[in-house]
Image (cartoon, rainbow over all chains, first blue to last red; front, side, top):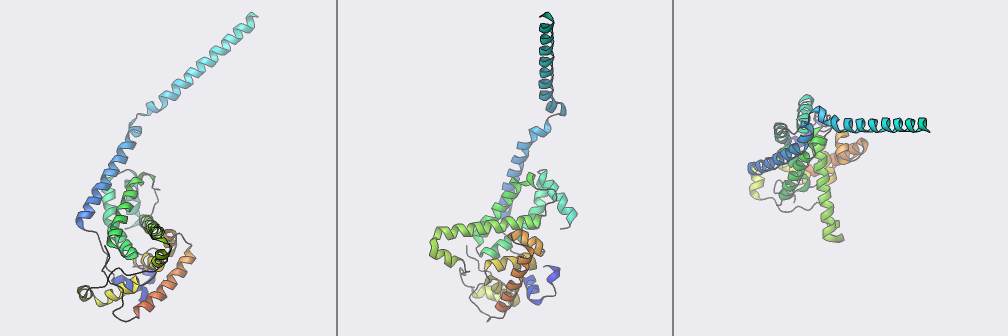
Amino acid sequence: MNSDYSDDPVLAALSVLEVEDVSAGRAAGLRRRCHAVLSLETTASEPAHKWPGWRRWLAPAVATAWSAIYVVEAIRRALAFYRAS
Amino acid sequence: MDRTTELRLVEGLRNGEPEAFDAVFEAYRARVFAFLLRLSRQRTLAEDLLDEIWLRLVANARALRPDTRLAPWLFTVARNLYWSHRRSVILEEGENSGLLGLTFCPANWPSPFDLAAAGELEARVERALAALPPQQREVLLLVAFEGLSPTQAAGVCGTTPEATRQRLSRARAALAEALERPRFSRVPRRSYAT
């Protein structure tokens, strides 16, 4: 019951209503289904979280290093060609 | 449920903790079911919609915002599912029966046992509430029974707080009028259709 309306006799009358519930068996079945979904969701999202920090940086680091080597080598060869000509 | 506990449970849900789910399930299952039951007046439908709500919660648990308020979230999903079902029923049944579906039609009558077993005041309130249109019933249940603020109820119903206050005022007047009606009206107390 909303306490803001407790002094209203009409709305306060609603407080006598019972709170219905599903059967215990149905509630248990629903809980099991929800736990199953929850565990599936957890499993699906685990691998990314379990990777050590260095794994996340490995691929970008290799790509960056390879690109840097490529650029340096291209510049070096261009300079060599320029000096030779 | 105090806000600190609620925030802790939301964090638990976001982390996929079954214990957090169990706590939320125990705290809100009956409340959401009672809301659906009084809105739909059909036990089987209310049970099916309840399943859908909780499965949606766990499927979207990781996407919950850390400051999520659980009661408004659950009642919003409950209300949207109910109205979505109602619209689909109206479309399926065609135009004529759809128009009939806009007004509440009690599915069955109260048995003498129901009336005898129920408290007199509770029976009267239940019958008066059931006689209201669903739009008025939902706002009464959310604000006066479930304790949501008009602003929260507006969020649940997809309206403005002012519109919710006006609807609440009309619903209150309709409830007062329904409570004044003769003792044995046609609307059942707790004889829900299945």
